[in-house]
Image (cartoon, rainbow, N blue to C red; front, side, top):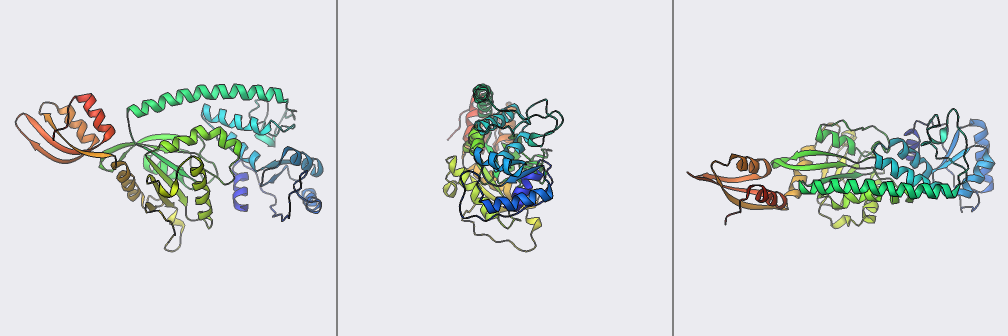
Length: 398
């Protein structure tokens, strides 16, 4: 937990002056911590003189305000920190709107604005501030108006995205979604498979906006590979609500690749956090045959790795070196092939375009050339079969 919260802080270029664990028997309604603990932390704040204190839990507006008043320093809780990271990472219009909507919901009950990185007059990011910074007392009516406007803008963007989704369905290709805990190596794997240069660094939430690329699986099957936002434990409810539409795209995927950073001592805890979020999206993890568990970063392990995974679909890889990725692609192709059918066509010998299409989209099983036609047996997905019949007006023969 300490490593994670420090990683979240470093993700927006904060330097850690000091970290401490606080034991407490109960949560105090007005200040979260007890009087003695607050006094001890106040002494540390005086000696280290930090710009900001991060509390790795969710604080109520009253708790945050009282702690700031008592300690004389800016306080940000786990939710606010993750919001700052998302604000810094969002690139697409929808991503930026989702982050701002989550931020407005978060700030609605807070009188002092800590979320101001979207303000153009500010120099610096978020709570850190910069030249010309000023603390603004939020008016709830103004926030509510802004939230209403953001929701309308998001709905417009989502309608556009849904049109794009329907267009992809008409193509149509199997969708393969990469999911996993933040910093598990999804973007590195995405880049290795697609030969792309999607932003991939050893940072929490390096990827926020979903990215899609067309790939060719073994047996020449075309597919779309989607890189998604990383999950994290105690993901703020504001973000779950704002990003639900994006996350729900996972539910419609043909294959779900769960990337797990097996080099971490707490990889099972991270795995279970992802499983819980998937279950919240309606995906029954233990029984969903679309899911492949990918244990990544085996190049960082000193000895043979064994695990107690109950899933039969599991692969051990290094997305960095490419070790095991071919096996992963074979497993993906096996799942997408379950929707395939064995069919036979008799194609006119002069119709080279139809023959070429079948070779590029299916797995050829047998071919016999006659004087006037070519008898070809192959395996095609149902979607490709429908598409071929529509484009070339051939029917399977029995």
